[in-house]
Length: 149
Image (cartoon, one colour):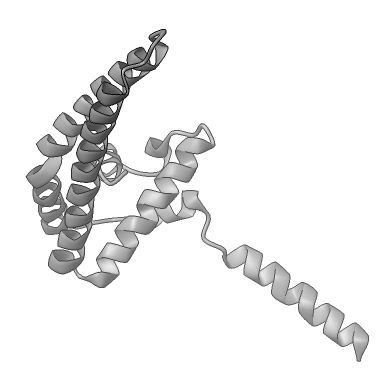
């Protein structure tokens, strides 16, 4: 009986690992039709300039903050004001990204939304491994998925 259980556990372990969805496989299997791509592009474009502007301002605020901290006698009022500005811009970025994510779910359906964000996660994993996602996915889909990071 113990031998049977051992064989069963080994078999289930092997079949589970064979069926696992690797990031590469997720990207290889990810597709969107023309209408879905247009909808996704429209959703991305709606808040993209807000995100670009806010991220640029965040970089400026962070550089300014680093400079203020280097001063021999830091001006705490300026540090606090700069930090508040930085946090406000970060808030705008995050809020815009949340609105974007909800728009995708509402306009494209929950199933497509889940597939898109699995692909976004897989894209991040593949890039973190030093691989090119273009080996698995067409360039326009790579650009669309990167907009959700």
